[in-house]
Structures are given as C-alpha cells and as structure tokens.
Image 1 (cartoon, rainbow, N blue to C red):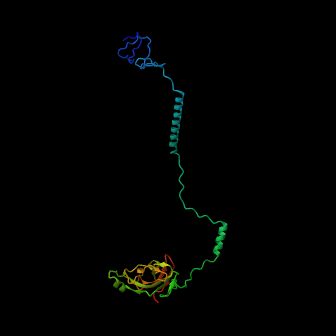
Image 2: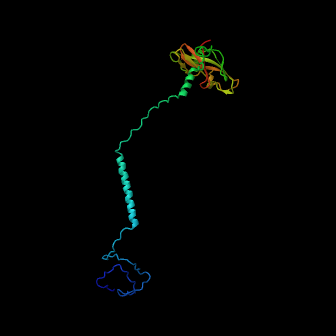
Image 3: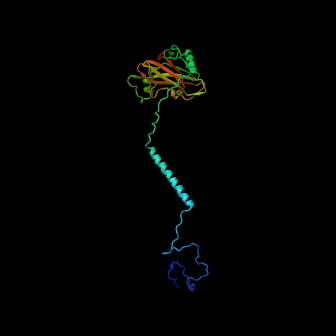
Length: 266
C-alpha cells in the first residue's frame, strides 16, 4: 500500500481496491471505473481532522419564515396577555327579568272601548227560567237537547235493593244514603251511548255536587249498549247523597254539555 506524502491526512474511509488489482501510485491520475466514487466540486471530507467549510447563513426564505413565525407567536402571546387582562375588567350586571307592563290603549281604541261599555251586554239567562237551579223542572218532565230525549223518574233510597243485587256491596257511609234514579232516554241522532253521553248528579243544599256511585246496582244504565236513532234505554243511576237527600238533581248531556236541574220529588 502506498504511503501518502508527509503532511497529507490519511483517509481511513478511502475505497479499497478489489483483490487482484494494483492501485496507481499516490497522486497519479486514474481512470474512473464503474463503482468508483465520483468527485463532487466543493466536496470536503468529513473524516476526523479534515478541514470544515465555513457555515453559510440562512437563505432568504428561511429568514422570512422565521420572521413570520416570530410574528405569529408574538400575536398569539399578545392576544393571550390581552385576554388575561380582560378578566380584571368589570362586567355589566345582567338585566333582571321583570314583568312587562301592559301597553296603554291608543286614543282610538279607548274611544271604541268606551263605546262598547255603553252598549248593553247580552242578556244572561233569567233566574226564573225553567231548568235552572232557582226554578228546576219537576222530576218526571221529559227534556231534550236535540240528540237525546230524557226523563228522570222519582229518586228513591235504594240500599235494600242494592244489597239484594250483590251481597258484597258496601253499605253507605255514616250520614249518607244510596239513591236510585230511574232514567228513560231515547236517542234521536245516528248512534249514541247512554252511559257516555248522559250524566246524573246531585247538588245538595250545602251547594256541593255529589257524584260517587253505589257499587253494583240493579238495572244499571251503564249496561245499555250503543243506540241507533229511535233506540230507547231504560235503567237506573245511583248516587251517594247526604242523608235525607236535601237538594236537587242535575242532568247533563255530552262532554260539558248543557245542565238542567230537577226537583228531588214530584
């Protein structure tokens, strides 16, 4: 192996010639072959002790990128500091929820309202009209609402009958009685259910309404099925009333329909 001249560094990474070949003397020119290292202009060896080239500064675009990044970081930091400072700033108290005042009527509206007040209101049903609480129908009077024609028979105390109907019925509570009311109802429309369309209740002299039933009763009106036009339902309705049945009976038709009053006896 040829020794390099004195003062030249020995390259431990130099390529080793393949077996059977003789390398040219040191410093002599050689013809490169396939697989030989290619000399790159400006290439400097990086083995230990080799002289290093001077470092170059950052490219222009690198400087611009760094400046932009610095600016963004500064902006973020500035916003963060500003946001932190906002926590110390006083905030306005929320507006309390309050009821709004009714707007006053305009002059024209006030005039119309005053004129309406001067007009007579629709006449209310007279207290002496038949079927009202002050002037009830006599029990047994047939009444109609256009779909049903109903007659209430004379109410009677019915505990003995109810007890015979079902021995498991409970007796009326102290101070009350079971009263049976016979009902005859003829349907005038297309189809109707008596137990759904008709309601019989009791209004006592204490101005209270009584609706409690009495258990299993004989001839229950609720056992009558749907009626067609001209069909007739006959049955009993039972209501728990104050002892002595001091008061009036009422009949209502439909859901929230008209209500009429009847005396307790004929």
